[in-house]
Length: 264
Image (cartoon, rainbow, N blue to C red):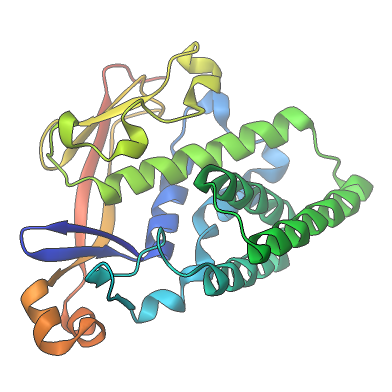
């Protein structure tokens, strides 16, 4: 679950909904970064489904007594989180082995960035290294992977994941000074996209529904919907998090994504 607090409520977003939003962003990405035609559909499915391991976990949120808030993807206990990471990757691999390779690399990067270190994580990393080696051996027989292709596709997944998270973790309309610390220096790795000419892509809310990006990484201005629930803290105290979440209707929050330059 992705969660932030605002005006007496927990704003809660399912991980897989965020993943689906990431996929919508990938479809609209700058033409220079479009995946190779032979694997484009696989890459887009991978981006859309990279967090599908959370589908079952997010049906019923868990309460974190220490934080007096719902557990999120950031502080969810490691062992069950890794179990569901693995489940999601198994499902992705059954659909698209190349997509599973991308997602496995993506999760490895997230673990490295987190700085966590324990035996379960070590075992998971070894298991995923074996998965990636097996997939690469299999694909070499039919559709060899270019290193530049793999690098570009993992960068696309990383950026779309980050931007979707930015939309979820930052209250729309909030000033730059209140931005989540993960992106205070822009989106890491975006300087590697050729069209940015070495610049890091940054984002800023212009109003409660308009997000400005610079340099602009998409082909045109567009509107996108983020599914969420605003769960009242009063309701949580009265009913518990599971029932309060269930009784809160889902909303679709619309966001217009635009920049100073649009590409043809």
